[in-house]
Amino acid sequence: MAKKLNIGIIGYGFMGRTHSNAYCKAPHFFDLPYEPVLKLACGLEEDKAKAFAERWGYQSYTTDWHKVIEDDKIDVVDICVPNNLHAEIALAAAKAGKAICCEKPLALNTTQAQKMVEAVEKAGVPNLVSFNYRRVPAVTLAKQLIDEGRLGKIFHYRANFLQDWTISSQVPQGGMATWRLDVKAAGSGVTGDLLAHCIDTAMWHNGPITSVCAMTETFIKERRHAETGKLEPVGIDDACTFFCHFDNGSLGNFESTRYARGHKALYTFEINGEHASIAWDLHDLHRLSYFDHRDDSIVRGWRSVHVTDGDMPYMDKWWVPGLQIGYEHTFVHQVADFLENMAAGKPTSPTFREALATQSVCDAVLTSANNKKWETVKY
Ligand code: SOE
Image (cartoon, rainbow, N blue to C red; front, side, top):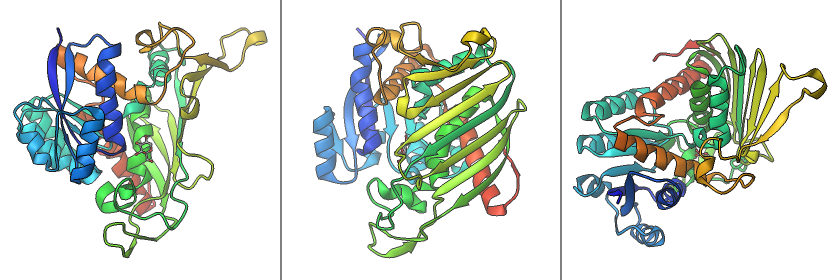
């Protein structure tokens, strides 16, 4: 019988739902050393916290996150609240000896993130940041192909994360979901929210980014604040493009915007190596495109690998070959890896320390855009 592991989740929004779903599903598909028990759910508004707890099967609820930390029965604190609350909660959770799963980006900035890393490392608690796209089987397979050396020397890494949901000036800043447009809650715009995903995956695939040259734009300068009702200046970046150098000598090219009409969440990357190239697209997430120059010329071309076979990452745990999985499964894989590693006393990537490196790149990107100069990333 797997040992019970009590989960206390803070935040009942979009991410609170993805994480709760993952704790429910993981034990059905993975042989886990722990059985996650949905113990306590926390959110600001009582009726919403109660409804969330009932819907997902949490045993109780609270509106005060301190109660989650103070509860001796809670083993894992799962942080799914806006970015400006991550640091305070994580520091308290680490002090209380809890394992921590924190939503991305780790913090508002590198200074905060550094303190969070020190806290979890001092306390020796398991820690993980939820950059979930690493755990799309096709994205994990890309990592495997790179590590096997199939691409040879890598020359280019390009990634985009394109959305279109903030084009209307009537979208408010602040409040549920739209806190992402309020710089006080989010820290930054597309850089921390979307490019952080691309940077996390890129550095996992292709090693550290050493220097960046960026530009950002805020297309809508004022928006009504959902909490104050007043028109207030917008402090986030609506769009960001940057070039970079990787430590291995390759060049990077990244773009993110919430103003690409027609694209809802188009995360794509392409990696070009000496022998082969890889491309991936979130809207077709179960496929990995692969081109290998070493193939006979008469059959050489881009292949679309359907990542559903049992020998492909995570896929032996799901259905039968040919039947695909989707977005929510990335969080299930995250829970499974976290619990397995926790039992084995091993870290789960990306740890707070690894997410600090992503935060350092984000900070360098924003500094570069501000200074209109190349910036060396300070790790
Ligand atoms: C923003 O719209 C958002 O929900 C991000 O916050 C998520 O991290 C991303 O996966 C999808 O888009």
